[in-house]
Image (cartoon, rainbow, N blue to C red; front, side, top):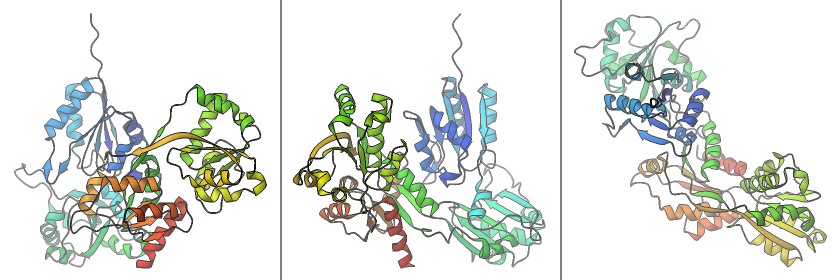
Length: 509
């Protein structure tokens, strides 16, 4: 008898309210193992970067008012992929079981005999008020919370939410998907006994960097004086008054700023995380990717000869430092094979990459530029010194030329190439073209060159970003392409770049 085909499993994963940092650990774990991912419009697109290479990503949400697939089609797709033996993730904004139709999808899977698991998510009903500084319960103010949808199934013959009765209830009311019906809902709440001066807050794009909060009264909302645009979470209750003291997000130094990050995908994600923690709305548009050069017998022989052939190893980037030391480890199995070699590094991030291998950095310039590295050595160290410069194929030629002019022997080991990054897996390019940005950050001349090749220009009327450069080499590249630089970091490092950006934003406030 032939064996029955394997049955996979479907994971209904709550993607959270928008901030990618609010995805649960379990959610990220199953996302990284998925063969297929079906995701909605309100899922943070950055979450898709955690998918494994080759995972199929299918958009099944609404775009420009159109539903990509019907609910029945989505359920059929989940069943079909699972029956092929796949691990399937259904990535849903917020929590799958709170106004997310997750129950319907689980019932369809159960009827089809397909195993499933529900991974709860943080709902916007809780997260958006928290990010706006509104506690839904507070001692002496509110001890109950009612969460309700303002958008019911249009095919239902009657409305099941008794708004009038809800108006007579004590505590806080949280309304999801109610922006377009707020005036009508408010009138019904007033009919039920809610006070005219009851505070109302509308939190649009809650937990995103572009979060906006508007406040008013129920009377104003009922009279149409308090207009709200979707997607918004609406909070009704006395707890809204606490926002004046508890609002924390608006105080972040980059709140309300849309920033484009142009580093490699991995580096963009790290920098993007940091900028989000500072309150920014981040668009990660990597312009370059790093491709390691083949590591064969010739390179292994070079690793074995490092201790005998050289006195210094020069490392100019965190990626290059990590790749170089991995090659040493893979070849010898022992970093002590470097013997008495001394290590020089450009910048604190490169030095940190070296220290992760439990090695110390002997020399690092105060100015984090490749050309400044030559100035770290005495004339005696340079004259007759043997330097191995391990870096990318597009490295700045100033360093080896300066060392050679002073009598050094310099061998260049090209570890990797930088190539243009043309993909847009998170849709960041499309969002930039549609809505522009306030700032764009450049941390290398190669990123500048490839940004120029992409020729990304926001639509007419959208803000064009001002440029912040990490240092003089990058600034020269920007000017070569006719791009105006708003500011250049005093410290030529990522820390310096972020500090420079914050300073620019604060000066405008």
